[in-house]
Amino acid sequence: MSSRLDVFIDRMVSQRACLDFAIAETAAMAGPVFELGLGNGRTYHHIRSRVAGRDIYVFERAVASHPDSTPPEDRTIHGDVTDTLPETLAGMGPVASLIHADLGGHNLEKNDRFARLISPLVEPLLAPGGMMVSSDRMYFDGLMELPLPAGAVEGRCFVYQKA
Ligand code: SAM
Image (cartoon, rainbow, N blue to C red; front, top):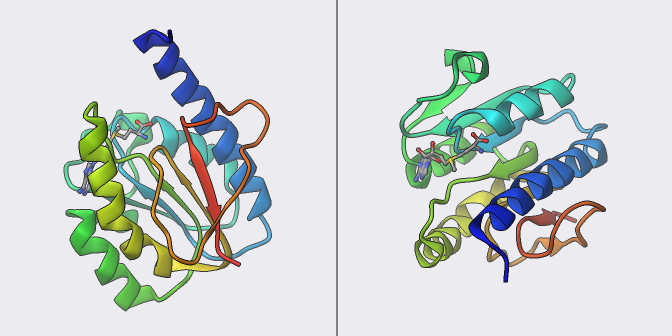
């Protein structure tokens, strides 16, 4: 049986593998990258160090990140994603080349309910060819779920793409 430490390590390793894969796959796209859930800022810091030539916007309701991993104010979209995702779609349209979501906590049922709630808000934001990496299974109508890249652990991360 996996310990909580095993699960945590698998999640971190999978996040990195899936992000690196999706960043590389979308590297030729010009549209912005959206980070949903800043937290400590570790994945934002990773994305920022790997993504070149694309704007990175961070969606967060309560910024409390490490100072080295805090996005500039003009790239921070404050508020609850159930409000800010539709507002961003209205303002920017379907432009995102990559969306990463790590919004959940320790309650898996709650995480699943929230993933179902925001899936229809995330899906229209992606540009054609755009990818989504999520720590939770998402419930999309039109996106394709991709096989995980080498190094990622089944069930710890999910990768989707808009045709
Ligand atoms: N990936 C981050 C890292 O590497 O440090 C950790 C993200 S942490 C698990 C989840 C973050 O999502 C928290 O900062 C929380 O405030 C944010 N969050 C959760 N639900 C949200 C919501 N409905 N709207 C906006 N932010 C939310």
